[in-house]
Picture 1: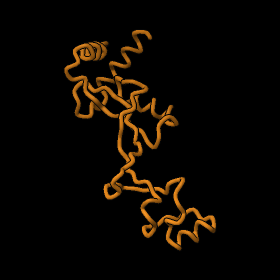
Picture 2: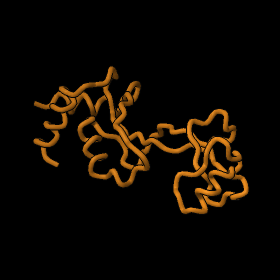
Picture 3: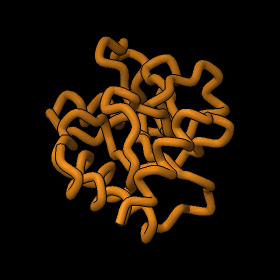
Length: 142
């Protein structure tokens, strides 16, 4: 990496949206499925792969027997399903990025590694003197 690239990173840091965060660093945040064991707290549900077909109502049993895909209604037994919510988790495999632009580009180029959807998320270098020093240095390059 030469001085030109470092200057470009610093220039981007100076002009980017800091997302209301002092000295933002950017990480990948990925939406993942979280299994819920109290189904009353769940947002969604899916049929288990190994469900007992006797738990299906008569209408859904008929649909299943006719190879239709949309069976599993509210009348079917809860034991036939697993319940889940979608939640955002940090995915630190790619590490931290100095700019949101670089993080977004990483996500675009590597979207197949992320489960459902991914986004860039700003975290602060607050009270991290080493990172603050490096970031201020990059931002000062002209």
